[in-house]
Length: 222
Image (cartoon, rainbow, N blue to C red; front, side, top):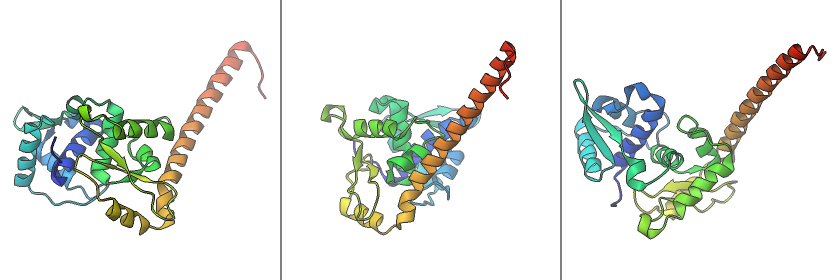
């Protein structure tokens, strides 16, 4: 498959994202998809695409089988076909979508940012799917992600998608090295906080179950 353009990547990423975050509106109308492509938050780089540009990109994606067009009650609607065309599980599709929408990210950042698309149990789960995407055999289409060289002073390497073609590793390394150490650690801190919230919820659930069991048995836990 040929490398995808930035707008083609953005459209695919938005379709995957909105499938999970606004399922009642999916498949998306052209207007909703355009708003998602030009969204000013959770997007890197920012875009200001026009309707005609997006329609051209959608026609190209339809020709590749990556997007399916259907007629709704009054407007045409669009949905992605990424998992079937690339023969990928939902976890891998979620990772690729975030890389298409936000650019290169660390494993910790991916775990946090994919939470609305798929909740990974831990960092090793994310790493496992990244390794699979990076090791895809040539007959399966070749690697879909690449691990970028770790920038000087960075605690963790970043991953980038390859659907848009080969990555300029020198430029990516320079961009990473220009970020402060605090920014590099932000994803790791967010991941730890999310995990802490999950553990707190599990503790409250266990406490409630224990209290109910003690009440049934007539045991005083005080």
